[in-house]
Length: 238
Figure 1: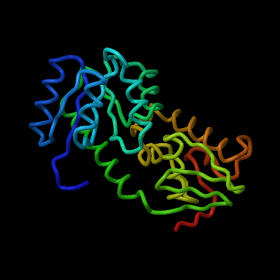
Figure 2: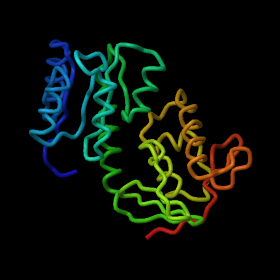
Figure 3: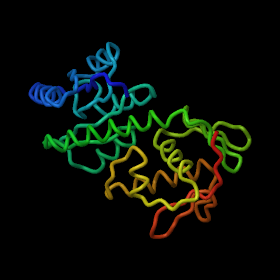
């Protein structure tokens, strides 16, 4: 990221929360802009660069889940932290599955929110830096890390979700190394929390299917019992 002041867009229909977050972000040196619904959100996104969106789930019109889905359809859009009053795992998982980078449960502490904002911005910066590293090839497969495009040995394009792309990128950048679930959580967009170990297992399972890896006897992504997973292929990067 450049030296310009980082901009955070707060999307919440509660005036008090918007004002509180606006002041908090301004005090921390960020440029803050606000919106009360999806219409205002996309207006703000079209007007100036935004580095992060704080997106409430309960909104008038399209809710936060719908808006998250729309934002994630454009790879150029900024990362998202979901704001939710529901401390239920299903809401957190749905948000992450739709492409949110993190979530914060209301009422939240200022220090926690600021820490999560900094963590997501840092990961976004690292992601930008590592993009463009080129093409990764393994066992006849080709993965374009810039476009997040996967091609099988028959030169057929294989569709990947953003979550599967992030996970594959973590594997091809760390081949033949045993990686714990915590390490994979750290390298991908998920929260570094044991509560989401099952999410990693689920994404590994889906990625195996995309790679034609037999779940009962995988050859590409092997389970390291008690340790995590190993991407076994020799990877060539260019």
